[in-house]
Length: 468
Image (cartoon, rainbow, N blue to C red; front, top):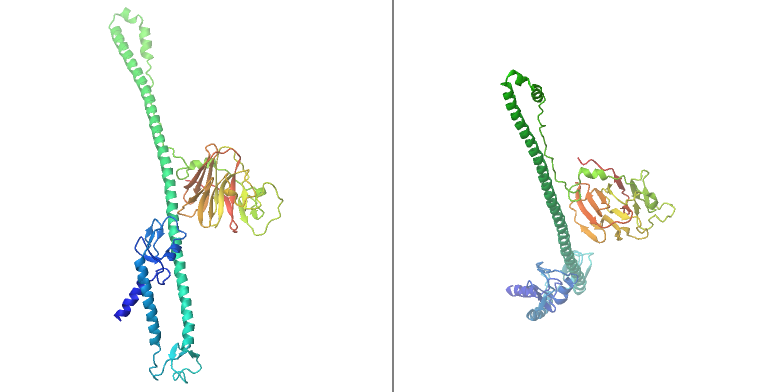
């Protein structure tokens, strides 16, 4: 038994973990595991940056392995021992029946038992399919070979799945890094804005203090001059009061008029102007000020694809399977399920909201009115700025696509256009959080853009709700 265990251990060590067969041209990779050269090359075939070990998942940065000639000799030895053992085993398998001491030459398919000619006689296996042992062994050997191929294919498929998961892990890492870079950029931009706003606020307060101080100093001087005048008048009145009757009554009217018409300077009162930090809506959650720019956007039926049904109030659009008989116009989209807004924007700031709910596919945003009506994906053209959901992934589509990693599926999208500033900002209506901002230079008429996909759920331009 110890010899058999040793042979089994030797055979296991000489097998490739991928194909489960004896190693052919064995190679050793960075982590120390061994594989057939062709097997590991196939396993790493579609990988670029990282190369995981199929056994321990150790990540190698290079497609590096080295030949193992010593293991190749051991594999050949194990293969020869296996062949010799298999031959000896086949000879031993021709054992005798325990009941009748006859050679086992038959096999019952129903009971899956090896039989001798006496065992096959009625009644034990009557009516059963009994055939020669070599024929049955050949049949079941083929079935076992099929099982081996099936298991081998499953192993290969699962290894491919693992490789795909590894690639997805890299994709997630890249998406998160992109999101982190985006957030770092936004916070850096916000910090610079806050620094400028802080400096401006302190400067305004300093100017306010200087202005108030100057007016206070002037008011104090006025009171000081008035007190000095009062003291002089007091002395003059005191001197006048002790004079003789004639001198006292001479010019008494002047002194009396001055005493009775005394007028104190006005007291200067002040209130320091209240200052507050004015945060830009494109960097933080939308504030009530956005409502100043709310635009009543409607859909333009003359631009709608024939499979799109626009509601009577021109606020909602739905995809229908049957094409409508509509007059072809240069404004109408004839390939992609797209409709534009009726209103054109050539200047100013404008804000509107679109309800998307649980639609599986949609694209909303802003485009130039001259956008081609013939392309399959108009939003992919250069002069279109949109957010889209496609195949479960979100992306901002402008001059170049930007993957978006959203932690919560937005039920609606807020769109804010600042024509002069050259910005289009997108917000999630779930919590009014900022999603993405496009920066560009606009020179043509811009319109609201809607591509609704081919499902039956509508896109709706919804009223802007109160932000309080």
